[in-house]
Length: 471
Ligand code: UGA
Image (cartoon, rainbow, N blue to C red; front, side, top):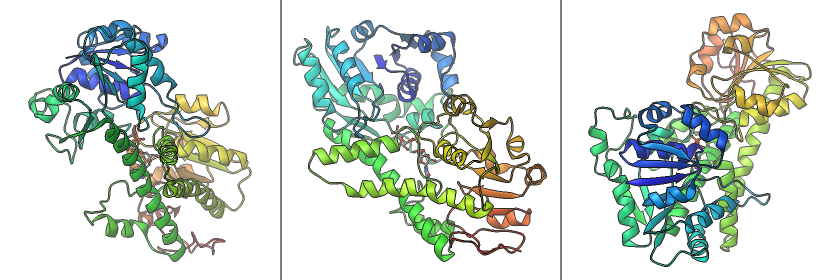
């Protein structure tokens, strides 16, 4: 099917590349000329596994890039809107880009079109998009508006798209639902998975994925409620981790004990320095506003956000209790991206923590496998950047692990120790076993687990750290 995808950000670009891999012809529309030129030259603007392969496979044949929305709409049966919905000052989603695309689509409708919301938008957006298209000259019956939320995670976006847990199509007419079913048929009927060049199947993938057909409003709510629930799981385990620290329990053990209950599940139950990224923080605020406007005071979400912020404050306190004073301390930092596998630093807990530590007078030397360029723009020249984790640790008073990149869990501990001024590691992502770290000569602090050290630790000022687990 001929499709248009408007917006070439994470969601739009990945969706466009994956639709092409399913056999559709895709025009990705963007008004950023620099980005279009780069995409046409074969550059890939984001760090995302398998995306370069898919773009290489389909560029110029099944996928094209253009700034001409009108032509793309005329050529396509379905138009996916994947433009940004950034937060306003009040925390609501700013839908002005969606509105402007809707106006652009209206002027080009010359036969039946399905306009599909792919960005995360508040409930009622589909109604508004319909109204805007009608106001701008299109006729009833010439188009339908659907919601087809995307659940991909950055870093694993391509496999999440092609091997989803479910596909949600929110359509209010049978005609519209039929178009969306046809688009996803290669996944839902399983033919895509039989191809020899299929993108490799990740663990746990359910093949074929179920398709859930709902109303447009329900689909809009499914997206916000899913992200809010996942963020709530993370804040829940972070709150439990704080109690573990106070009573000397181990959150990894507690997590295993909770997560093996299949009703709860262990995924998204990893404690750390709080969630970040372009989705959870923004979507929680937006969902809070949606609830308020509908007359429901969703205070649970306030608490989820409060716990998340508190988690960073607790981490700084931990650094302080490991090092005593902070002014002039040299810190190695591993990880700048908001999570492993991506170069995205939006709302990254690591960047927020680095800014606080700089304010405290620390010096920072950081390493990240993918996010240096973006971090340089954000932090200017306020920190040094290292080429390897070992270089980041060189001469450091302590090393902080702030992003869960796989390579950070497999460091040569002997080499690392030889680089550091003091062998102190403060791990915000629980990548190491405290006993192994203590045996390797480190004083090791993590989240929700007793601190470990080869020597008895001096009694700490707060009850969060200072329990000796290994000698
Ligand atoms: C999230 C959702 O997981 C996707 O399903 C959704 O499609 C996407 O938002 C979106 O709305 O576009 P993403 O923001 O890419 O995806 O990243 P996640 O893997 O969800 O991680 C978010 C944050 O939570 C990261 O900072 C991560 O480090 C943190 N996290 C995640 C934890 O602290 N603990 C966990 O157990 C899991």
